[in-house]
Length: 224
View 1 (tube, rainbow, N blue to C red):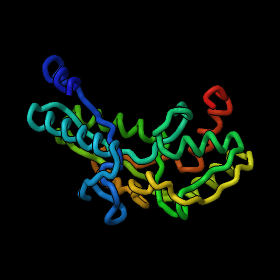
View 2: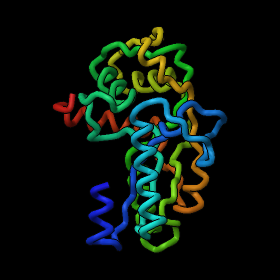
View 3: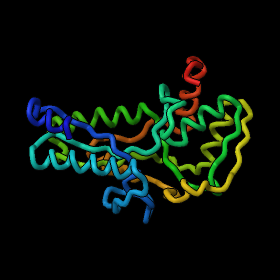
């Protein structure tokens, strides 16, 4: 709110692209999830991000700021912290597969996810900023990002282990009680709107993204 109010007062022509999350949807009622899906987040991050979206929408519609929110889904790639907690399962899988440590997948491992390589996300952010600046996007617009590849957590773990080549074991374990309460099951995002408004489609396959990610951390092993 301080950022938006400062922009409103001192630089109202600025463009703001808010990075939101697919967590705002909560448990999917249908696949793929589009922007019309109800927003009933099941965790604190989803609640916070949804509030952020509404602040940006409010400042866009009421004050005319050029705001847009992109709902991201499981972003990964070089320079992502492998130590910080709360960044999702992908950096955990990366770190453990590179160290040859076992990877545990909760439940039966069949929960679906669409993962976005960081360069695809950057191109979407850039396009959203340009389109918002040009007035091609309505103030406060919300747009999903997603991928054509929708993989299970078990598939993701096995691909990661295979590409890392350190023979990590992959197993399924029961859900911890605290995490089971906020589990959403599977997720697949509909990015039709992003394609229409931003002329955006993901370019990097999951396996290629994993290869590029692992190669970066091999060359910069201090991240581990």
